[in-house]
Image 1 (cartoon, rainbow, N blue to C red):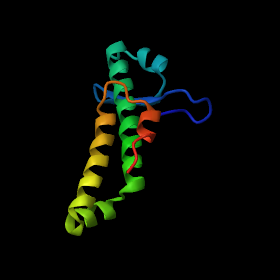
Image 2 (cartoon, helix red, strand yellow):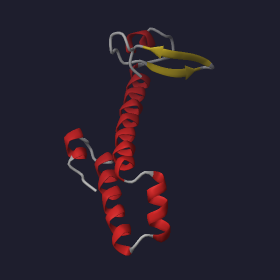
Image 3 (cartoon, rainbow, N blue to C red):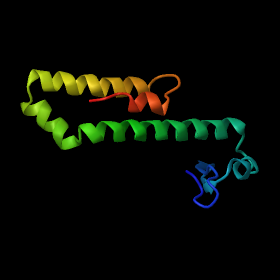
Image 4 (cartoon, rainbow, N blue to C red):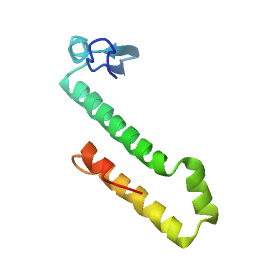
Length: 109
């Protein structure tokens, strides 16, 4: 998603059977058949991917998959409620109109 050398955003897309991989916005816009709408869609998808990764990481710190499975299977009602409330709060953050990192870190298990 970013060039490691200069931190330039990079995107990949396939248009008419041709893959354009690790390209900057300018490089993509120079390709026939790729317009600003396509680039804007790629940017939105990349931003959503970052948000979802942040949410997953935040949940996984407090409730890794094994712990979620154990609580779901044999946890108390209180443990299930606490876990569900935390996960729902993180999901609400991720699905908000403008998720801000500091708001995510404020969500505690």
